[in-house]
Image (tube, rainbow, N blue to C red; front, side, top):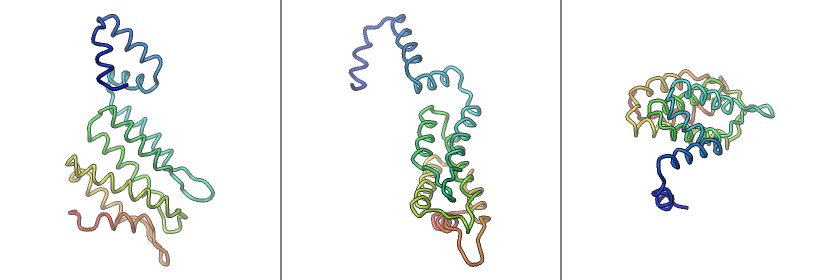
Amino acid sequence: MSKTSVKKAIAGFDAVELRQLVLDLYTRSKEAKELLDFYADPDIPKKLEEYKKLAFKEANRYTRHAHKPRMAKIKALVKKFERLEPGPEAVADLSVSVIFEFIGWATPSERLPDVTAEAIDKFFGDVLAYLDNHMLWDEWGPQIMKRVREMKTGMFSCNILKKLFTRRLEGRPA
């Protein structure tokens, strides 16, 4: 069903029927409940912390002696948070916080599968693009660059995430 057909279907509803429809959606759909709760009480810091907690849990997923975050789940969390329309600053805060979480555990000795490293790097690129598109680079860019520079490196081995992140940051203004 398309948005137009839904509009046509509810065009004849009176106020009572519309209220009942919204309440039915609220009770039957978890996503609608979350959206309507946020609409009724838009506590952005509280919702941001809730999503950060979920994203950090996924970012720190550790199995078989290696970090294995499921980037599809992290991206879905960011998109879901963005659908609440908390504003670009809050979405950037969530995304950059996840990047900082990756930076926090990335070490030269970390056994990170290539596929995972590439997925994290792609997410990093998406976050940088988001910051650029919403003119938030000046706010977050210096912090990101500083943390990437401070990432640990080994004497005989490199930190794969530091290498990938540095490559993405080359040529950007400080």
